[in-house]
Image 1 (tube, helix red, strand yellow):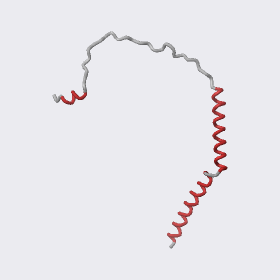
Image 2 (cartoon, rainbow, N blue to C red):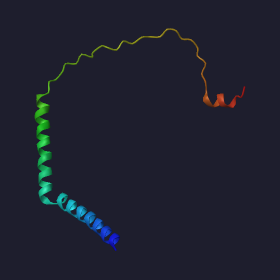
Image 3 (cartoon, helix red, strand yellow):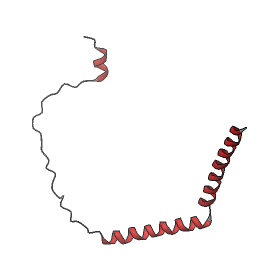
Image 4 (cartoon, rainbow, N blue to C red):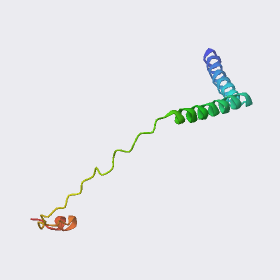
Length: 87
């Protein structure tokens, strides 16, 4: 008898927790507050982006291309042919 009452109280507490949590998050008041907070974050990002310094591009002509004149013939390996050969 005592176990059934204890389990029913646990189930009731869980159901009430879920109910009140859902009621809070789906309320209009919470939606307004979260929307206002998102708008404030967007405004802060815009203000911060305007204050960022723009750095000069110093990466021009950094890459040096080297021509390879040593054209040694390299043996080309084919994966499937290597598997077929059982030496």
